[in-house]
Image (cartoon, rainbow, N blue to C red):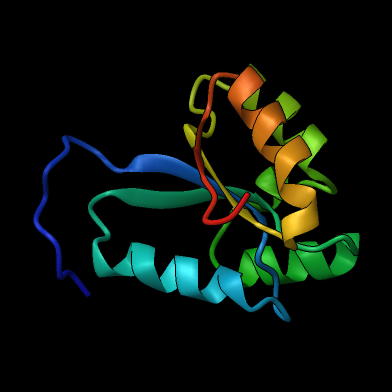
Length: 117
């Protein structure tokens, strides 16, 4: 599905923290990104606090297994080592967790999508 116009040369490498199978916000963010699939490509994630569920869910979304991380700190650290590392992180966790995750991503030089404080 392509609704938006292509306005950038290549999709941004996008990662998600939270937003797993039982999440409310994650599916909405992924659906929004699909509306303009020229802008984002989901390349990594820490979708679930349970490692097995995280891997199962992430692979079902098409993310490579080696880019599915047990937590956001590991994701940010490991992606920073990659030449093709994540460029923008979507925070799709409960609100009370946002600050520390947003701060870590910004300190790593990443762009952040976070709809609440």
